[in-house]
Image (cartoon, rainbow, N blue to C red):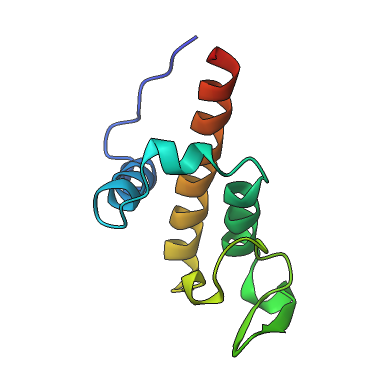
Length: 107
């Protein structure tokens, strides 16, 4: 079953734009994403999705990051913004993880 994107759904459009930005601006290729077999894409998404007031932090080298931040990721990659922007980023990271799983299953 396929679904149409609701006309004018800014949320869905923003998530797709963020996913494109991750690839085109940040340079996170599909091949790069495929190396994240440690579920780090999903863990990073969780960190961005958890509201700040309930997020637990730990000191990591010289930075403070969420306690669930992927251990294989640099602390400087943690860049929270406002609540909506963080949720858009979380959704795009989840899409990256789902795409990674789909490619792995197809092999």
